[in-house]
Image 1: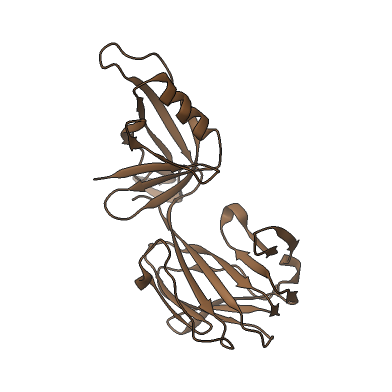
Image 2: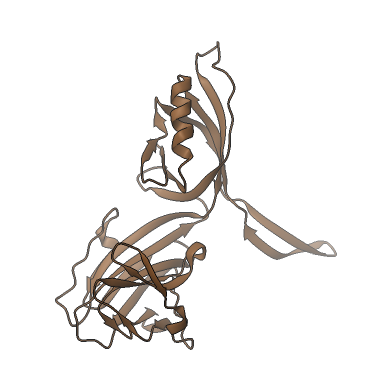
Length: 276
């Protein structure tokens, strides 16, 4: 049975299949491309095509006004994530509420039926996660957190994985200090396709975050509590690509640095889909 739930900015979950607020008649879960064609005689050439912004619509059904008010208060705390589980895999859509209608409780069914529109702020995605250790440390341990560990196999200084999406997927790389001139390489079929490096020190207890998501593109130093310290983009080696985008299929990311201290690297791959 399919499932929907929302997560608000406080990390609180709202079950959209519950009697407190049921998401009925969902629509807009498919694919919608915006296209421009150039006519040449009786032929039409597609000269531009891109995915349109996602818009998921439906109805929220409430038993009483109190449940409606509780839901309205919940969605007021952004940012929001809509999670959809059509079979056995959860897909996430970053979103905001474009509209939430309200009328009166119907005399026909004694329910408050409110049209709702979720404005997509991303593609549907799965967040894949793994932890790897530096070559100077002990053998790597791997953790899967929310997803099947078979997607990743960890070794010292290396993370190997499979991007199941048909599209190139951005990554977020967390490198734990102490670090000196940390570097990373992405290889596919034994061919290096991207690399990056930051010149300088990342101090013990801090981390270097390399984020290739379009909504938060950055190379920066943070504390272990995710408090921003300084922008490290200006320290990047500009002859390298630096930001990691994993192509569809198998890949390997290798981490190195010039210090002799054991270091842990933490990888998130944002596996993206147009439709689920």
